[in-house]
Length: 124
Image (cartoon, rainbow, N blue to C red; front, top):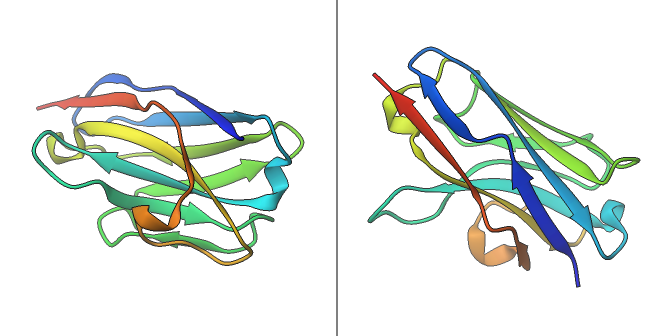
């Protein structure tokens, strides 16, 4: 079992930045590909960014590309999502997720472990 705990969400003004963190415990963190997803009320859970086990390969959803950076520190069992130039449409609950396997996962169904999420609210 892998436990994931997110932090770093909050209320930010449009144009601002946030850095989300996700700390993993329970199993070998470096064995998992990691992803950040978000879900707004009444909408599906969508991918924001994903990263492979080593951190050498990343993927960004179109809306996140250029404004977000996913990274990981395997020594600290932590994955990060740095977001900048936030806008009200980025308001959602952001979830950290982990999947077994060496490749990137692009869909929520490919991930096996989930955190509880951290709320990001962007005011206009």
